[in-house]
Image (cartoon, rainbow, N blue to C red; front, top):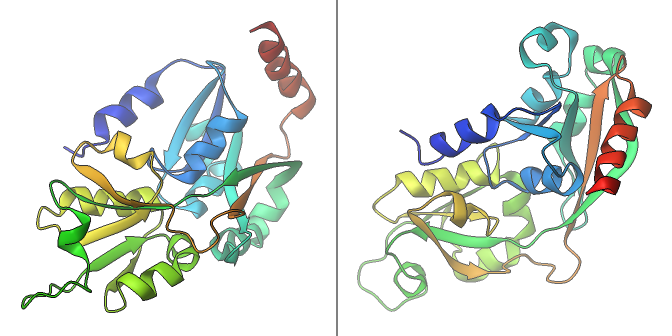
Length: 240
């Protein structure tokens, strides 16, 4: 069983009024952004494996199964630019026809960590160590995570094999499964909370230490009643 399965099952089975789709699994920056905007028991968070799946959860042919009201996806990063997959999906005719982007934006400061499988330490994993045996490291992350940490990777792991994953948390999952310690991941510090067999080896490894910000957009169906649901959400916040 995946280290996240029990946690995900618990998170997605709780009763709530509104369902929010995000790029999962737990621990992604999309997860953090969704929690930042949609807080409290009014909301149920549903993780999807790709940005395409997140957005498509709002389409009419999926609504009977998902009943998703909102979708949160990254659109652009201040360091590495547009999130290409998001822009590609937003240009699909079916998405243009049936969905709308809310004016509201979610801004999330991104601080990347390097994680490894327990009990490996940073001194054991650096390619620049004076050792007769140097393993070929694999470093996994979303394309944005790899792009935002290029200077760090060039300095510390210039020969590592870079592996692109659908999300940063899925990169952390690869590390959790690799007991050899060969695979490392660039992800959020939150991933260390959701995976019990990984640890943070280095923190704040992004190229831009001060202003690395990702912008997230909120989507919903054209048939959604934004005013009514926004009123309910804001009323709940005011009462608590």
